[in-house]
Amino acid sequence: MKQMVNFIRPRWALMIILMSGSLFFGTAPCYPQSDSIPPPAKSKFAEFLNNFELTVYVDAYYNRLINKPAGDTANILNFASDCPFANEFRLNVASLWLYYSSKNARGKLELQYGDVPNLLTDPSVQFIKYMKRAEFGFRIYKTLWIDLGYQYNPIGYESSFPIRNQLSTVTVGGYYEVGNFLGVKLSSQISPSFFLGAYLGNPYTLAYGHNKRLFAGLFMTYTYKSLLSINYNNLMGSSDLATEEKDHMGIYNNVYVTVNPVNNLLLVGQCDFGWVTNKGVPDTTKTASGVSGFLQVTYQFTKWFAASLRGEYFNDPDALMSTLYAYDGKLRGLLTYGGTVGVEFKPIKNSYIRAEYTYLTADQGNLVFSGNLSQDRNTLTFTAGYKFGFFH
Image (cartoon, rainbow, N blue to C red):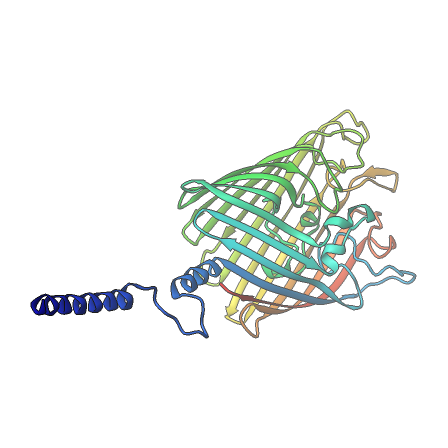
């Protein structure tokens, strides 16, 4: 019996040691009570946050009319996509951008407030004026993506956000280009040099209202290193206003080229042209046509100082994009041409202070400026903007 007891005691001791070891090594790791989130979860959360980019952008401006005629009480500048008010300090735009990007999904939300979203706002379309963009997308196959929602139209080099341009003022042609659409878009980076896409949607914007008309389009970009970029975008179908009783089918083409021939020099050229059925002047059974474009040169003298020069032309005889004007026995759409010269100072990264002079003139006798009292306009524009971000 004593031998049996002596035999059992070592076995119990061994079992106790093994059980103690299993409790010590086999239980879940303990973390300080002040930090209840395990490191792996923290790492995944940090990785998830890294997919987001939050940006705040603010732009303020002051316009000064040089040749304001006597009797002009209007302080709104016709055909101005941004900086639309004269002779007072204004908030051009305050915008919040939230972007998400991962391997297989992406999304973009842009909200805006200020003069830019209020421009051309009709009471019936107040619903959308603070929304600049709201879209999400998924990767279907390799570089093929599908995006849905309220999206930018690919047409045009210029943006209504001055920070995305070299000059804060936008051309008359840019003012009349088709804006956002509500619909679906397919796009793919076919090769390192070639990007191709297509879209389908409604012109659901401030200017076009709650519009159920459909249009489709193609967009493509060819790039050669950092020297050259050739972009072609179009729109096919009906882009009439919601108030139009009849569809006018047509095609709108946009071509722009950017060239960096030497360091610090940027050349940009753009041409828009199109045709629309049953909208001729004066015979409305004929096809209407119009053309616009600009040439721009920007030279970056230093990291903080640049200068730009731009010439523009807009000719819309059949009111394809603009409205009809009656003057000097004529009935035709808008004709304007002019130029802008500007300088930019960047005190810190992602900021700018700009000064620009713009001269615009319309067809002889067409008094479309300064409250319909003048056929030309001379404007000094001062803008300042800053963009800062979080997360990414």
